[in-house]
Length: 247
Ligand code: FPP
Image 1: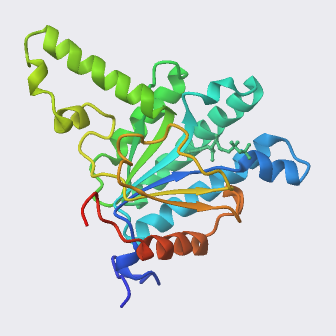
Image 2: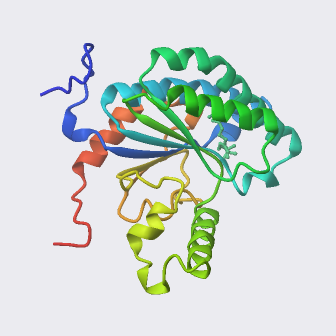
C-alpha cells in the first residue's frame, strides 16, 4: 500500500509518515571540517539539503515541518559564521520567492524577529504573504528561535491579559498557553529527527514535542542527508508504540 498524495506516487507507505515533523539540521560544521573547509561551507550544503528535503516531505504527505535554522543561542558563534547563515537565509528567500509560486507549501517563521536585519524581516514577511493561501504542507522555519524564549513570551502575553482584566489566572489552561505560542494553531509534533550523533533537544519545540518520538541518526551529518535517510527515519517512527501516557 503506497501513499499517493499527488499524481506522482512516492514510495513511502502512508502509515510511516508523521503528520508533524521537526528536524534539527545538525552536523554542518563537522561535515565541513572533515573536508578541510570553513564551517560556512557546511551551511551552504546544508541549505541545499534543506530545500531538497523540504520538497520531499511535502511529497510524502507531511503536513507540518519545522526546521531549526538558527537558535537563540547561535548568536554565540563567531560573527563570520552568523553572517554566513544570515546570508544563506537571504539568498534562500530571494530565490524561493519565485519557487514558492509553483509549490504548495505555506512558509512561516517562528522565533523572535526583532534582532534580525530589516531586509531579512521584509523578505520573511513577503515569503509568508506570498504563500499564506497555500493548502499543502506548512513549513515553519525556526529563526532566532528557542523553546524557553517562546514559553517566556507566551507567559508574558497571558500576564498582560490578566493585568488588563481580560482573563483571570484561573482561566489559563494548556489550550490558552498553546494559543500564545508561535505554532498557535498547529498540532503537536509527532517526530523529532536529528542527524549527526547528538542526542538532545537543544531548546527546540520544547512544549510541542512533549509526546514526540525522537529519531537520532548517528551515522549521518545533515549535509549528506538524502531522501532515503528520511524514509529510514519514517520506518523507525512507524515501529514506535505511541501511548501518550496511556497503556
Ligand atoms: C547546525 O550544525 C546547523 C545550524 C546551526 C545552522 C543551520 C543552517 C542551515 C542548514 C542553513 C540555513 C538555513 C536555511 C533555512 C536557508 P552545526 O553548525 O552546529 O554543526 P556542528 O555541530 O557539526 O558544528
